[in-house]
Image (tube, rainbow, N blue to C red; front, side):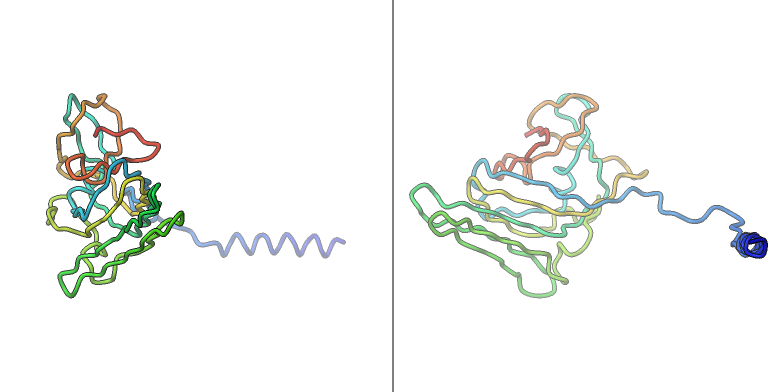
Length: 208
């Protein structure tokens, strides 16, 4: 028993002696990044509506200041996946949803589906490697670029999966919403803005 106990003590001393000593704090990424999914509901139809870099940056997470003045919280965003569910109409008239990915290096790519009777149309698509949406959208850089064109019939559900970077010392960007917000409150706005189809967030306060 003594030999076993002495051996265990020697092993513990040896382990402590061989542990690596870190002479200084290790490097880390201070910028806050994450990936999330946002869900939207098509209160009215959005027919072949373009989605730009600036719209994504403006309408996903903003901080209200006063009246209709708001500030972006994100400095960069990238689309990871878009899913759309479109029900058939009450009269069983087919309804088509689609995502058209835009590319500067080749043809566009359209992914579509059409509802039949009571079965929903369903689109599940990721940005092609060479498409504009396959790259990060950064504040102040080509914000008018169209990433994709969306056809979202009324009563559709849209899931947008994305990665984002929070502001970290960049110049704040201000924009105006349709309705007044409560100062200090964080909102998620409509996907396009109310002038281009009212695709509203589900379970999150909005200013449009």
